[in-house]
Image 1 (cartoon, rainbow, N blue to C red):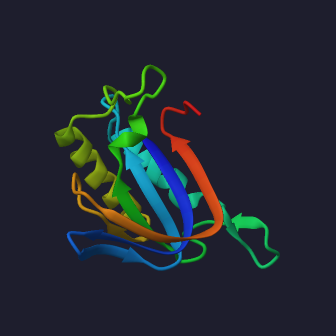
Image 2: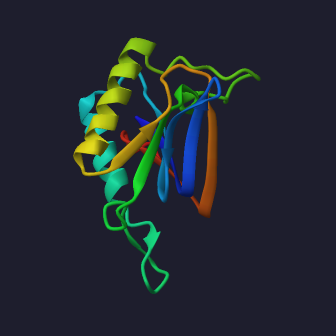
Length: 149
């Protein structure tokens, strides 16, 4: 399981002109699921992201987590995180999970984050979404449950 995590001052997702999720200060999490992922990967990634000390403290040092700042999470499914661009000009998505499995693990990940006390907003799985955000920093991290990077 792979995530692109961005600190945001606020964020929202719109599908067909309807806002499906919105947050104030917190994290925008683009989540990709690979065919080898399990609930263990989702649990690991949820706990890791929620507790990352990447928010500034009073001394402006990255020392606080999403929990510490009482922040929120906007979680958006993103199968293209498993796009392989090494060959040719068209990405291959052969490592991405099939939609049924990806949706199950995406929803499980959301429940895990909520279970850690975080308010969550979401997009709609497999929908064409407009993601709106105001970066904070900007600070962007890549996290992989298989620790590939």
